[in-house]
Image (cartoon, rainbow, N blue to C red; front, side):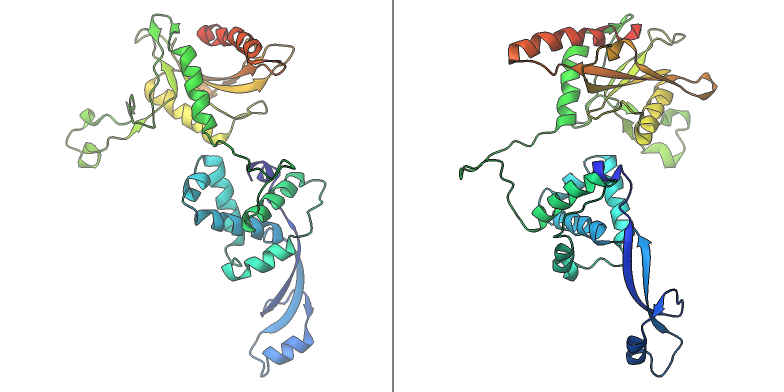
Length: 322
């Protein structure tokens, strides 16, 4: 769904049968006579419009509503901000016409595979939605034996893997810290209640922030600290707005002028970690870096992979040089 919506909301022509005073299409005379005699100010007409509310977005909406009924549905649809935004977009364009009773009709309208040169990823999403709504199995083998899979939190696993490297690294005279949001350990207070202890609105405000990794400035008058955010997604083409806002708020709260994102990326001839992308904040208020951690792709066995990725890990321990 995220990949499909990156191409934009699916938009196509759709025929609407309306009966109101804002006529903007061909009048349906027989339906008008049936519904509007005696005349009360409304006209029955048919219009063909380019709209986001169509058979594809309705199919996605029905799939979302179906997933909500499952025990793990809520966690699937709220696992990150991109999915929440995608769900919100689909809900917004389908709210007026969504109806549970129309599910069979929506499935029937989507039996023909979508074939659009621009909205290519919607074809895969359409097929997946149909499988979910029809409670179909996904079989990748000719064997009749059941196939088992493992569902794991890739973002958490990536973060914890990076910590196995950074926990022994130092920046100047300081070591990296790793607050853990899952068990609420190591969080940093967002508000300083001591500045105005009589202010009741902040007296019980214990909101905390949990940067993935940070190394404080070695001295109060120095700017050699860094905040790192582990991102298990591709960032080669730029940073997501919500990710930027998050790390900027961390940098501001902790008075650390350098922030960075560490994400997995395929090997290239020129090492990505040697040339991180840099984003200078306005008014010389800080700098954000984007580090591509190269993951070996051409390995014949695990031992070979382990040796190659071990060599790639060294850049994290000297990340202040980049």
